[in-house]
Length: 224
Ligand SMILES: COc1nc(N)nc2c1ncn2[C@H]1C[C@H](O)[C@@H](COP(=O)(O)OP(=O)(O)OP(=O)(O)O)O1
Image 1 (tube, rainbow, N blue to C red):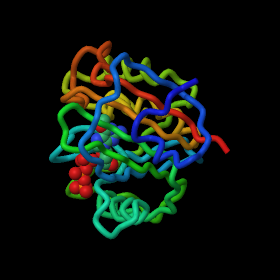
Image 2: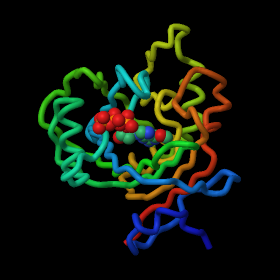
Image 3: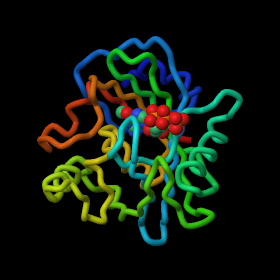
Image 4: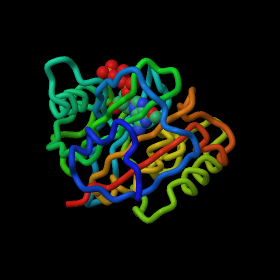
């Protein structure tokens, strides 16, 4: 019988779930507060592509991610997701909720509670903004071992750190994304919690240490 991690009962809100994966030997950390965020992904299901943004500045500069940020006071998470997508990629899209993640990183002031959204259509060609440079990448099959793929991509990268490959740059995304990417690709709603040790942003280094920042993780799909 799996034990739902602290903080996720409220997010599950009575919905049935099925454990997808879990790992790590630590105990769940306590956290002082929770802050709400959103993250939105556009998927081109005709051409098996995903739109990601290259973070040009500030926190987590140099990684690829969906488009998102904090939920402002007075906004619903869905409103925030639409606003962030438009601000960061100049795009409007019929966003659908597909998951929620709770993260806590050692010594941080708050845990991130991130509502995840996806859409299969979009209003116009994405544009580069001050914060993000959008780029389309080929999606791997959801049955792919994402950790092995990230290791291969990391080895194949040019010495200048330039990503030539057209496939989704898993080695330059948040480490936890490797765990739930198959669920996003196959559109299976999920909830998850991930605890991280400090300094978890992706950076060059030994591919075998790809999951090193993750101290404990638990991800479950939502079932009807
Ligand atoms: C392990 O850490 C993270 N994993 C994943 N998958 N996503 C993360 C992680 N940390 C942050 N994020 C998401 C949350 C948001 O969708 C974006 C941006 O987060 P950030 O903390 O940079 O948000 P801000 O830029 O401060 O928000 P504003 O745009 O509102 O200023 O990444």
